[in-house]
Image 1 (cartoon, rainbow, N blue to C red):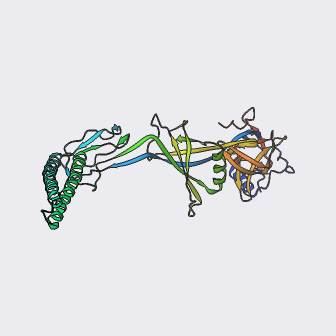
Image 2 (tube, one colour; image 1 turned 30 degrees about the horizontal axis):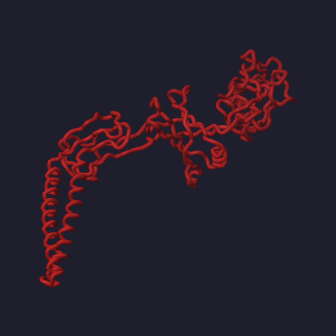
Image 3 (tube, rainbow, N blue to C red; image 1 turned 30 degrees about the vertical axis):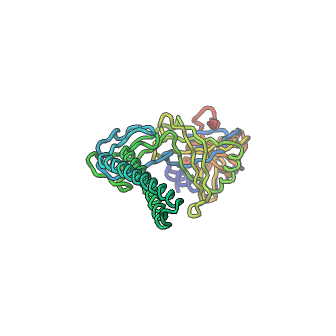
Length: 378
């Protein structure tokens, strides 16, 4: 049997060793004349790393308003362009005022008529009361005069309410923006007959300064989030995938009152000023909630950690330039680092690249002249 491994054989041995956490022990010596395996290494470090929770979030408008007509009539014109920013109180749509002006004039006329009638009834009542005091008129005449006067006064109050309603209907012919925001697609065009409180709405306005970012975290983090929120506001970063170097800064402002039992998560919202409008409703972002700093954490680059049938492990570079497979327990990931709770000591050297080429007894050739410590977390 050929004593020399083929490269394919070496890869297979390496893969089997990784899965079983076997081989490459201190008792195995390098085979004479065995080729060296080029690898990149890094030092195990002890440092402070942020305690963070990462999740995928979606941007939501701070407010969404569906603008609907409150009267039925013909839409005369549109005073904005689709996608335009509008202010609270800006005129958006005028509706034909003619029928409502006519209704208002009619209400004014009816009120004037009934006021005159009420005044006449009041005079008749006064006259009847004098006659009654002089015992000239009957009790029945007095009762009729009182009823007629009360009826006419009630008619005046009804007319006043009708007049106020007519004024409101006329005012509703001018549709104003109820919020600062950005308009969406125009859903109804001039000339159409629009109906009060009917579909489609005229336009939808989204307030985008500020905005919300909604996301869900596993329920196991709920106690920590509530604890740190009680101490003060919690900062939240929103990382835009196309521009990860410039995250947006916001504040956690909402924790839902119920855990979703189907997913084991709880919904949170953060508020972002969004003055430069880099966050847009419907956009997906990566959210980062920084709770605290974990001091004296033992970390290695995440790419140093391998997974086998018996769990996670790393290749540790020994003094004789061979590799030892070391089982490790990874507590969590912090950026590009893995926080290790057991299995490694600061100052040891682990392989970060080239693991797949390592086989039992292989000599390792370090490609980077100085072992690279894990990068400081930002």
